[in-house]
Image (cartoon, rainbow, N blue to C red; front, side):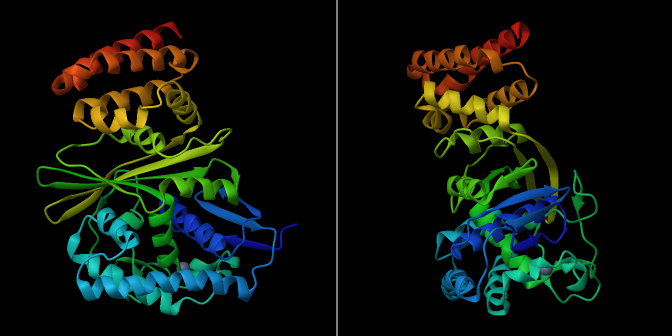
Length: 366
Ligand SMILES: [Zn+2]
């Protein structure tokens, strides 16, 4: 029986995804795990089948206080002192704002009272959140949601004084979602800095326990690479290749977006969302057949050629091609990796051409 229903505020799909993951994390800290997360358009409803008492919330708030202490130290020592703040540091593409960002987290924990504010479906309106001239709330830094206009391919070039702000609780939950519920890959090429973020959300609904399992794969971790540009469709294959395989994991969508900074200009050049079930199934098979798969990605495929191969594989999987022949593909992948090991400097190029040939022929025969 549902005793508490929480709603994400309805900022946009990206920010609400982060807030949903943040709320789930908070609930887990409070010892609350019975319930389901449902997606309603760009928002989420969390139906909880147990009481959220003040006592339970106190446990979660104690976790927040630990984060707050680390935030104070981070400011004091002038560098991230825990993995929590390190991950935010890497997700951020605009270094000078980092310190205000940390201060806002510290501040939002002081102000935080109860998660039950999200029982109100009109929370966003009542808390006066959105694009406002008079700024009262916390700034929505770019990795917390591409909030300028329509987010697909939108340039983030906000006019003075009309920044999008949200209340300190939404800001805090979005940050928890970024750290515990997101895969973050930071990279750079030339004078451009990128932070690429992937989240998994239920296509329709998932249990709180399922969301917790997703978080276990992504929490705290981030990845940093240099001198490569990452095609957006390579990201799901990288992100889902690490961590343990979750069997029977279905009904999930991926949201992937790229935050880009070039000089003083920040934008979100790419944003995509798609059902990830097929990709996940293929990766599960690859990981059984090729136990070294995460290391193969790490050692051979995190090059521009390698990443294009990964993107190409994702595209083919999404286009129905590889599904029936995935065992053949994985065995061939394994054989080629083994055969090409001596040839390390050229491995991605040599291997890449062959993998693309395989994927092509499988797609044709499917
Ligand atoms: Zn709010």
